[in-house]
Structures are given as C-alpha cells and as structure tokens.
Image 1 (spheres, rainbow, N blue to C red):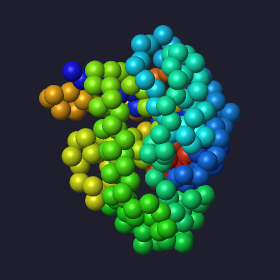
Image 2: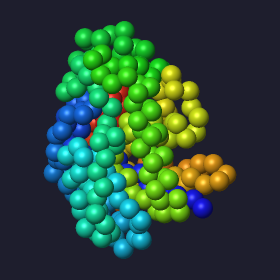
Image 3: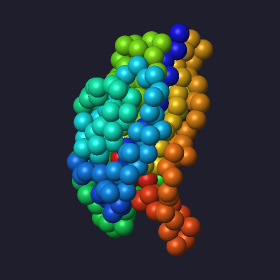
Length: 222
C-alpha cells in the first residue's frame, strides 16, 4: 500500500506580488492568484482524490476552494499546515531584512535559522512531519491533495529524504505549483517537483525571469 500526495503551493497572494514575507500573516490572493487557483481547479477536475487538506490561512483556503468544487470533496483544514511563523520578518521585503539583520541574511543563505521572534525551526519541522504523517496514516492507500505553503512543503520533503535539519532545503515551489510524492513500504518516491505546466499564462519580467518568482531570496515562499 502507498499513499500518494499531491502537494500544492498556494497561488499568488497580494504580498507575494509585493515580495513581502508572509509567514502566518493572512493576505488574500491577488487577481493573478485567483486566476492561478482556477487553473489548478481545471487541472484536477474529475480526478479521483481521496481527501483534500489545506492550511486555513486565506491564501491557501482561497486556492483550495475552487479545487474542492472541481474534485467534489470537502476541505479539511488543519492549523498545523500553516506556514512557518516568521517573527520580526513578517511584512518585510528582502532589502529591509538585509539592512536590519545583515548577519542573519548572510547566514540564512546556507543554514536553517530561527527567525527573530518567530517559530523555532526544529519546532516547525516537527509539526510539519507530524501532520503529514497523520494524514498518511489516515489514508494508507489514498491519493491526497494538500494545499499549503512553500515552507511546509519543503520541510516535508527534507524530512522524508533525511536531509540535515540544520541546513536549508534545496527545493523551490512556485505559486500554484504541484509536486507529487508517494510513500510506500520501500520508502518515499518523488514523482515530480514544482510543476506549473497547468498555468497557461506566465508573464515574464524584462530580465526574462518569472514575475511570480517575487521575493528572490525565497523567504517569500511562505
């Protein structure tokens, strides 16, 4: 038996569009994010999922709602699927963090760090592992959608693959991306990562980068 997780990062929020650290702040989806959520719903329409779980934060809930309608399932909200609490960084953009916390900004590029005034990193990883393990036990041979945040999804994969918890994980999750992981008797298998092929229109910035990359130092992935 194996459980298959479809891991969905929420669509673009208004703070993603501005490059602001969100953590457990609760901005809504932007107009672009609403369109992304609709495209996710179209992608999943008619698929036989067993259950749909989501973070209760507004950007995840608003992403999950059209998906729930499309697949005909209720949303099971769980507070443990909320993003990492980012403490004093909440609401800041990267240049502000680099100016106000220069030593942290430099070290954070390599190490998993405790945010000043925020949730301890190891506590965050533990609650991520706990909630995902409980969902897997609840649906031992199911196909489960989880709509959450970049930090949650990265910590889950890092935990599954046994990565050093003191180093930053190497994964990236774009807004409205889909990643698929199977958990079975032979261990975890990552089927695909950060798939955005369902997003029909991706506006490019003048330098050719995706405009939904937003906060380039990846603290925006919440």
